[in-house]
Image 1 (cartoon, helix red, strand yellow):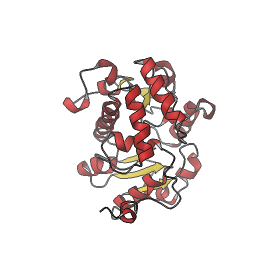
Image 2: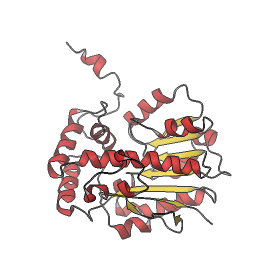
Image 3: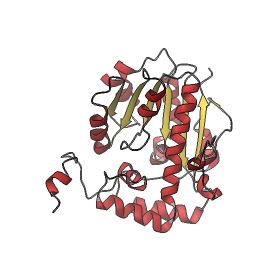
Image 4: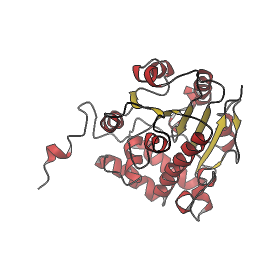
Amino acid sequence: MVDQQAATAWVPDDVDPSVPSAARVYDFLLGGSHNFAVDRMAAEAARQAMPGIERVARLNRAFLGRVVRFMLGEGIRQFLDLGSGIPTVGPVHQIAQANHPDCRVVYVDRERIAVAHSELMLGANDHAAIVHADFRRPDDIFGSPQARQLLRLDEPVGVLMLALLHYVPDEADPAALVAEYCRRVPVGSYLAISHLTSDQNTDKITAAVDGFNRSRGADQATPRSYAEIETMFGDTELVAPGLVGCGLWRPAGPGDIVDDADTNAQLYGGVARKAH
């Protein structure tokens, strides 16, 4: 018989298990185990509306790995991963530090479970830390002890906003928030964005998003068009191949891309450099 107390020992006391969260739904879609029944129900509802949604999640995770390795190749040795979620296969610090052990990583998430698990994973890592904060409050992030210790803002930073901005409503002005983060990092820094779109599979993605939003989660999704997402890069300079389906951004192997063109482009992805 399963010890129910042990099975839920990983759940922080202030987490409501009756309300789904984007971080835990994403964890489930990636094959993780740190999610609740309500998260699995939300994911299944999205899967019914849009079969193959788990492939979209995995393409985004593969995109993260390629982005980090690209930035390492450009000399980036510190990363700010915003909306980092629950640690799963291939987190930023493992990729970065496997190549350069001195790389520094600051994760940020507002989901208590994501923070709790990141703290456990990073407990013995002096070059990586998690900040419990809302992306929409950059002062709280840059002013945190973790960021002050690990980020050197006189050196370029790799700023990661993957599968994050579609959870920022229009009234919060996501483009202005991106611009504020870019303002705070030096020339030579890189910005990576992936964002859900309804340009492909419009009816299915709209149904999937509506179902998730109705599930009472705090994270309400807003798919956006190519033009709206491209605008978020502001005056940074997109590197080749520009803003494309994240499965099409410099694929390096069969796990990076799938046969279905729409699935490859359900999330747009791009990387840009702050040149001035």
